[in-house]
Image 1 (cartoon, rainbow, N blue to C red):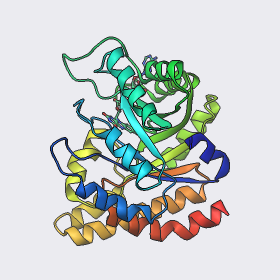
Image 2 (cartoon, protein in one colour):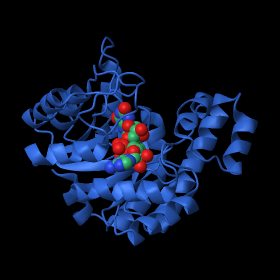
Image 3 (spheres, protein in one colour):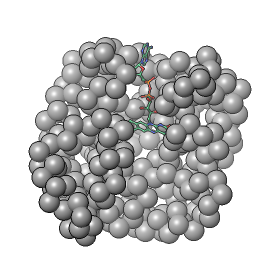
Image 4 (cartoon, rainbow, N blue to C red):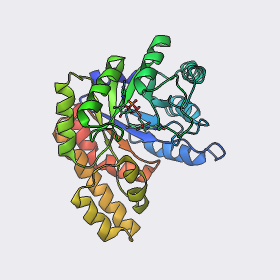
Length: 289
Ligand code: FAD
């Protein structure tokens, strides 16, 4: 099913993001994760692509398993900046061949000295995909502005170019301050970007996330989270509980504010996905009638 149809049917779309195992690693771990998250009834699962620039991504393999073995709709990520037109063409055709109907079109992070000129921006990839398939295309957006943009207005102008090329919904970068996110959505609507936007929520359940992914994205850390980290960084169980509570509270507030969807960055952690989904399931079901 094309994910744009989901947004027509549901008040709130609820999805998870997972990452594929490394090329030489076994597949059991991700299968265990999928076994557990199937019961949580996500509307779809997105699978990252070659994060860090490696082209040896198992996104396609995992997308096929998600679709055929688990009956969950996959959203396959695809990056373009370090790839040639031919490589991207092969990747798209490969996804179409196995019946994948949804792609998250991304530029990818620039690797110094490796830039190939076929695609400069994700909008180029969106245009390319739309010119050769009827696959449904989603895109990424940045509630605090993309780190390379001079300011949020410039970033939103560029986002509009991408959406106008054929993006049917946006998944947001992770953020921790809902007020900033809601203001951002208002700005998108004022700019005439009308596609549904899913709020990207990452539960902070491990101390390593603070220096790793959170630092990488440059997300603003509210004082509530700083206090949580200072107090519990050396106690993994307490930090995990605090992180689950924060993410639950954040999602409840987003749902109360009428967001189009929640995209949970679960980092392949089925336990965290279950705890949060159990907390919010009654609210999701109420909203979706
Ligand atoms: P773009 O939309 O191209 O934007 C990047 C920058 O270029 C922005 O500053 C934008 O304002 C500017 N820009 C865009 N279009 C134009 C234009 N026409 N003219 C001038 N400037 C322009 N990375 C991975 O490697 N693998 C993944 O699986 C992955 N998944 C992600 C999922 C989500 C939901 C998000 C938010 C990010 C993900 N990323 C992933 C990271 C992403 O690849 C990086 O953030 C990358 O730096 C930008 O990608 P983009 O698609 O947003 O780029």
